Length: 247
Image (tube, rainbow, N blue to C red; front, side, top):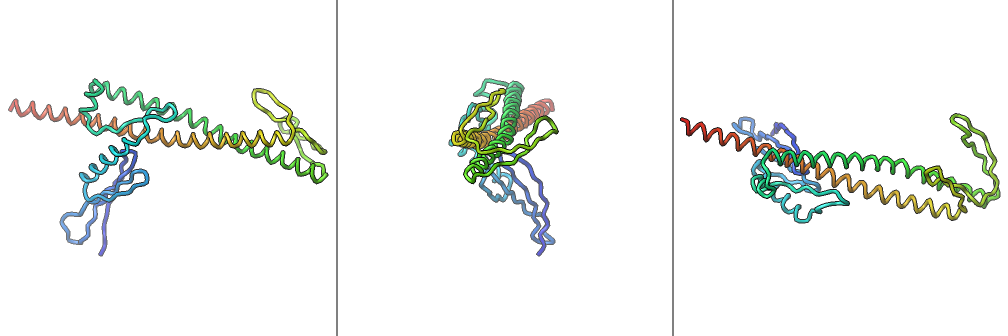
């Protein structure tokens, strides 16, 4: 038995769904419709779009109870199930609500750009710290073995000179802002290791912030679409009612 299916993919509710038209019989007049909904780590198969919408609403409402209202100063966005109640609660009309949501969306985008810049800085900083740790460890190993270290160092851009490094007990570390301090090798290793752990922890927090921020962007975009579509539906309903009265 051959199954012919067509797939349409859309996104919403910080998740995604795919709708399948499946014809299980060659001469079947109408194909059956199945909707596959993926929300974070949950995947559900629904037999209709109405069932899919019910699942989406229930999952959104249940997740909103445990959702964090904010994360490190980033305000959380809540999914709007009833647009009319949402507008009444805010005391705004449709245009004002859309302007508010668009402004919030732009704020999310600005914060995302800032976090991405911090993430790039940390991703470039961590390999540098690891390289410094390797160099200090190599100096300590050479000192313990009583060997000299032959190294090429950069005099200026494109110009290098070879140096012979005898046993050394101190190294100089750049701290930033054109400041360099001399440390014993043991203290340098401790300082670099601490900086490396802090950088990795900061990077992990940033990754979580970016994931949280992307979820809020998705929810805000869905809310904008729902408010706009609700307004279009209300206008059409009023036009249809007016046409009925005229006729």
